[in-house]
Length: 144
Image 1 (cartoon, rainbow, N blue to C red):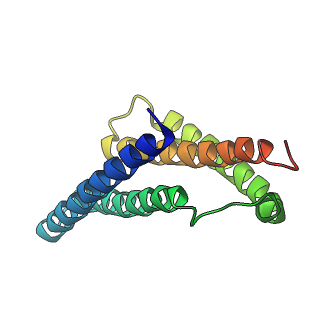
Image 2: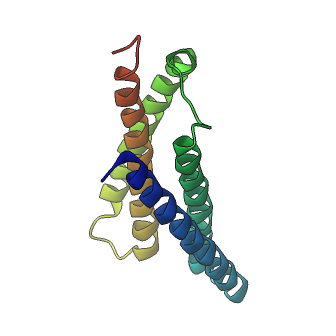
């Protein structure tokens, strides 16, 4: 498959995915409006926020294919100290969430366990995103 064909496939797939995210946003909004249960509302709000974020990230990929989005080594270098601090904060959050989950292991605290497991996965996701940004930086001139 040529580069142009691959880009066209990406564009088509991402636009279809954005439509799916739009539908997810709509149905989670409807669910939030219909329930008063705080657990269900919170889960739907999380999904709603994530779907909105996914749509923005999908647009970022589309924009990058059009050359609208560029990241320079200088831009990344200027903020690298803050990113390193953020990585340490995420590591601490993962440790804390793991500790809290360990404290309730074997109990019947289903809601706290469910929510803490979600939070742990989300913090791990953040840590992974930042670590992958470091790998991205390592491949950029003058860091390569």
